[in-house]
Length: 178
Image (cartoon, rainbow, N blue to C red; front, side, top):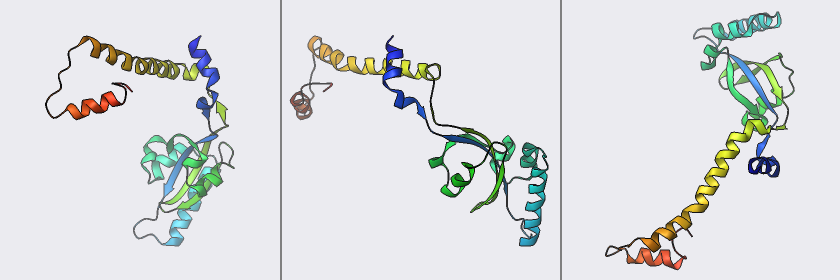
């Protein structure tokens, strides 16, 4: 089968890098909050996380990030290169369920590792539809030059004055579709 053969011949196209799913809880100092008070608030939330309080609930109530509405969930699976290097070095050493505080320009992030997916080749079932689309596009693109050449043989083409130069360029390159 053409689709199966394409999958086997192009394994590198379906390789998925080592990646992580993360949740975050972002804390920033309040307007008149002292550094000491902010650190106490940060420590209190960390203790609550370590005691097993629901991270989702804490993120919804305390995070200053737009992700708070989604329990702190951050997008898709991030590869090492998609993250800030400082963040990546920490989260790629964590185990699922671990929470680590990281200071960034945005404030303090409590990052929770939800899942760490090792590098893998996606299965045939996962990529079959993408292969079908790709093969269909390749076939259509391969037919366009032949179709245009046939069209030129069967249709009268009139070149408007001033456009002869463009037509000459097309013919110099071997015709349309070249």
